[in-house]
Length: 220
Image (tube, rainbow, N blue to C red; front, top):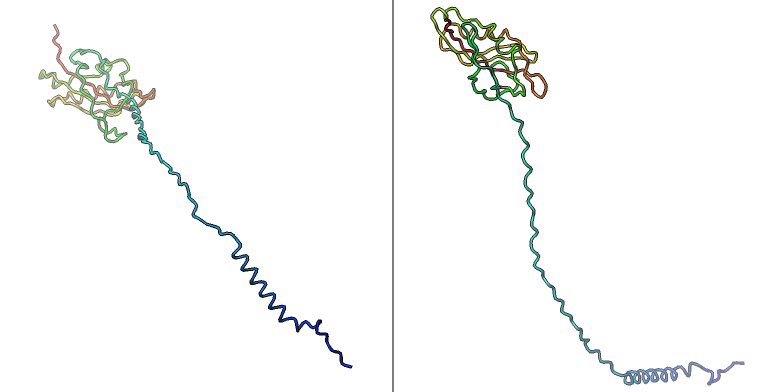
């Protein structure tokens, strides 16, 4: 026996009607909501713009303090040849002139050069052992000069080493006559023993100049 559906229980028959009612209800709700809500005025908000003032201060430039340069170091004075020498001495017919000392020569161009007369700094000058009279003891008047009655003056440079020995001599100023004054003066100086010069308490090799005058003394 075939069963038949009940019209009130058949959903397919009510589907179209339900859809129409639902659609109309939705539209009515949307229209109500759209017209029922108040209008919102979104006006532009006023922004209080604060003015920021920038103050520019006049800052004076920083002064640079210029420091004075340090004073130069004091230079060590270079002693010249001692002027404290004995007066003219005459022994028999010879005379050693120590009052007219020549000025010291220029400093050497090459340090440590002793071949020729060069001034070397020192604190204490060399002095002959026994005084300058020791030179006169060895000084001999040239025979030729004595015979013809000539007098003269010679300046001799002598190199005195650290042990006080006369190492080398050099004629710094000749007599101007060829009678043997130069050779006699050099021979006398070479035989003298010296107290060496000192530089900072240390013996040093130096040159020293010795003026020697030859004169014929009148004797009663």
